[in-house]
Image (cartoon, rainbow, N blue to C red; front, side, top):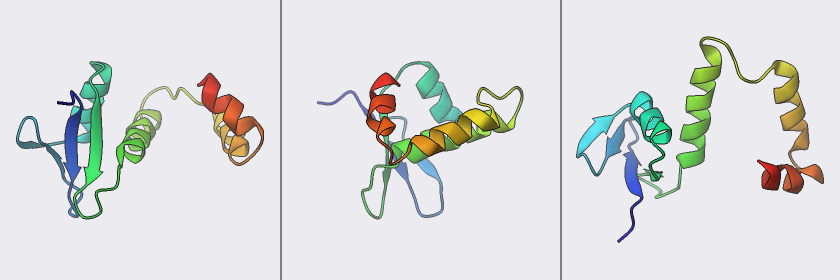
Length: 94
């Protein structure tokens, strides 16, 4: 049996924690990340893994409030890496 917690994302954009049997928020998922817990967010219609997009959404929320971690220049540079020869090197580094 896997220790990965499954979070279901419904068409109404609500997130359902199958372990707790209740709806949760992005803030709750952020807490899972902070606690180092393994989880996967799955679209209920397509069964697509949405974990990365949810994590990016949490990062965007974090960047929007308070002191940002990434400057606009740094984000621009990261975007430039996509599709280039450096993408594989950067992916391994990160």
